[in-house]
Each structure stands twice: as C-alpha cells, then as structure tokens.
Length: 432
Image (cartoon, rainbow, N blue to C red; front, side, top):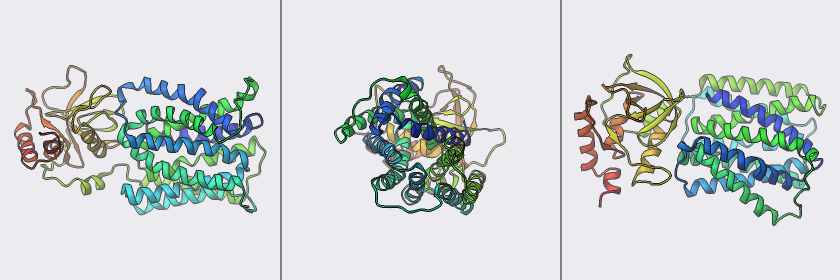
C-alpha cells in the first residue's frame, strides 16, 4: 500500500471517529471512553494485527516502550481535551502539533526536503489551523485550553519519538507494545480521577464503539505510513482529518462553514498535492551523505528489476510491496528474532532499514532464483550503492558465498577483509 492510500484511510477514520466519540460523551466520561478504547477495542484489535503479522515481530527496545507509554498518556489527555472544551476550539490547538514534529525531525532526524515540499507542508498546517479556527477566538485560561496545548505538544513530540521507535522495532512490534501500554495508562490514570467503571448499556456504547474502532484503524495505518515515509511529511498530512471533521460537523452537527474555512480547505488540498508531487520519496541524498564508502559504484543497469521495499526483517532480508521476500546474496548478517538475538544483529537490521526501508531498489539475479524458503536471491543496489558489499565493508555482515552464486565473490572477499582488518562493526563488537 502506498503512503497516499494509507493517509486517505487515516483522514477518514480519524475524522469520522472524532465526531462519533464526541457524540458518545452524552453518556460516557473521558476516562470511561479511554478505558473502553484501550481494553475493549485497541487491545484485541492490535494484538490480532500483531498475530497476523507475527513474522515481522522484532525484539523490544527500552526506547520503544518509553515512546509507547508517552503516546498512551497523550491519548488519554486527548479524550479530556475534547470533552471539557468545544471541539471547534480544541481542535485547532491540537491540530498545530505537526509544527513540533517538523522541527524535531529537521534538527534531530536530519530529514531533508526540497523547498516546494516545505511550502506544501506549511500550506497544509496553515490550512488546517484556518479550517479549525472559530469566527471569534476568545481563549480563556480554562482547563481544556491547557489540555489541548498539552495534547498538541505531546502529539508533536511522540510523533518524533514514534518515528525513531518504529525505525528500531518496526510498526508491528510498536503497535503490539502500544496495545499493552494503553492499558497501563488506563490503570494509572484511574488513580487521578473519580470516574467509575460504566454500567453495560449497549445504547451508550454505540457511538463510542464505532468512533473508537475507526480511530484504531487509523492508528494502525498511521504507524505503517510512519515506518515507510518521512516523519516531516506523514505527520502534517495525517492531520488532514480535520477537513473531514469540518465537513461532517456541518452535516451532522449542523455547523456552518465560513469563507475562511473554505480557503483553509483549498490550502490543505494544495499542500497535499505539492508534498506528494515534490517530496523526496527516496532518501537518495541522505544515503549518499550518511554512508560514505569505498564500494564499487555501479551505474543503473536496465536489466535489473526495480521494486519498492515495504518491510525490513533484518540485515539481509526484506519484503517488497508486492509481498515477495528478498535475501541478499553472498552475505549473512547476525540473526534477530523472538527467540534469539546474535551480537550486532540489531545494528545490522537498523542500518538496512536506513538504507532501503520504503525505498525503490534495483535487484540483480545471479544463477539461483530462490532459496529453499522461497526467498528470491538477489544483489541489491540503491542510488548506485551496492548494498551487499556495503554491509560487508562496514562490518554489518560476514561473507557467505554459496555456489553457484559467485559472481561478486572476489569483490565481497576484499570488502570483508577490509572490515575485519579495520575492526569495523561486528569485527570489533563481537570478536573476543
């Protein structure tokens, strides 16, 4: 699935979900709504997703747990913000959170976009705020104002930390972690509220059930998109759900859309078009800047097959968007998995993610087509970088030549020798 398709799902599920949750507040309190969300809907839904994608489960990291706990408490604050204040005022404040993420992503993740992309991002953010602003903005220092600001800041920070966490453990593992941290957030927050566990009344739960289910579908697609794309693009575009909210508020809540809001909608649409046309969908410049090597640079060969990487399993195995699995020829990186983690396995997986995750690669076949597990055996290139050789040369992999696929065996042997003699990567960290 493309990032644009995922963003479309997010836009409608979050937009519709917010309206329905707000309607459900006639019968439920914020804590009751969040508890219903975390325990009854999110926990089974996200664990089921994790079970379905169990082959993509990676070892849990402390930072991923920290990030998940942080966003879980921000989710709780969100329910209080839209409960205590008018949604037409709380939403624009919350909608400003991408500004924090863009700043953090620029300075700390070193994500680089061209000028038109930044114009598109700016137009999107400005448009969202204009759409959400009431006709007369008179903010008083009330509880909901502080809550909305806290949620905006929290979303901005956790979108940044979530990008790092998803990069470490993958979107599947992160979503499974979130399934449990939300329950923890519910239990902890109960000590700070007098709200009781609600009585079971199907009529009271109808709107919240539908709205929260849509929220969680949107959350899953959000983290999938975040793993595949730039945080500074995905986060602002994910906020276009406000457009749907405004339109539905007119139809369902019978609110009027002003001329300024129409202008805001136009800005959002224009921003989306600019970002999707001009954003760097491939981090080629970043790869060339960050990974300085002496690998044999090979110009693009028309005989190579081009494909996009959807998921990185470890240092030498990836899955394409069409479902095919690719095993890099001639190398073997340390293993990671549910039952074991070899020395330098996590580092090899992370560098492979930085190189190819969400990117269009070129694949070259030797004599064998696939291994006994059905994985295609390929030499992999990205922006003229020979990925197999790079992993050997930098000490992320060991030589693993298996005849008849020996096309670059001499070249690979030299790359491994260079890493071993230079004590790079695993040759320094894993050799006693």
